[in-house]
Length: 282
Image (cartoon, rainbow, N blue to C red):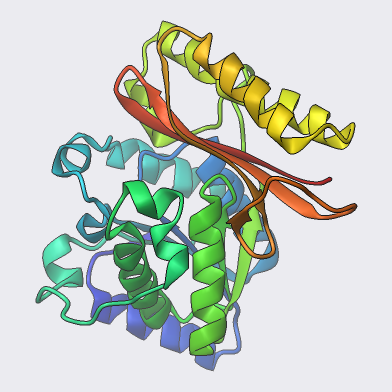
């Protein structure tokens, strides 16, 4: 595995690979890699001639500076894990060489960026849009891989690709979970053993709600019961809980047969913000 820090160098490498007719898979990450990230990497290795993994903690997508400062880092461990999988290139730019100047261009996603995650993280998706555009322009991938745990991010990136006619295929990879059901996240490292058990109740609640919906229970009743369940868990603070029509990515209070639905959760355990979701047909 070859590690690259300079944007100009990764652009030259990618351009050379493209000239040779070789496909490139891009896996953008912020490091502190876990099995969820590695599932994206393994999928890219299966699909492409070359895989480029980026590690960059993007300051533009953090509206909370304390969260940025506390974001976990394990670069040596990350490098070892990527090398053991057979990744071809690791792109790990510094903030100074990826953002030579503070960007003046702003990317707006309309209503999509102000709903759900965007309502609680102002400016987050604008920052995601800029860094993903920069990475796509530098790496020129055939395919780029994103985890479906960050569902709204995945939807927004797909919309950006479509609207801007960017020639890349966006691949969503299912959420990888701990044995307890807790969705894998770099932030889980900040949880105590007790916190991890509390966090596992998020998935338990989502499964119960899914079962209710698939039994054609009224959505308002499903939502009421899920709210009550989460309220009963000491140490779990709900930020938002939404049942969403995945096609329109809007909240719903009733559904149609075979409609694709997502139940989306965001909240806090021990001061650590966790998100999760379940996607299924009603």
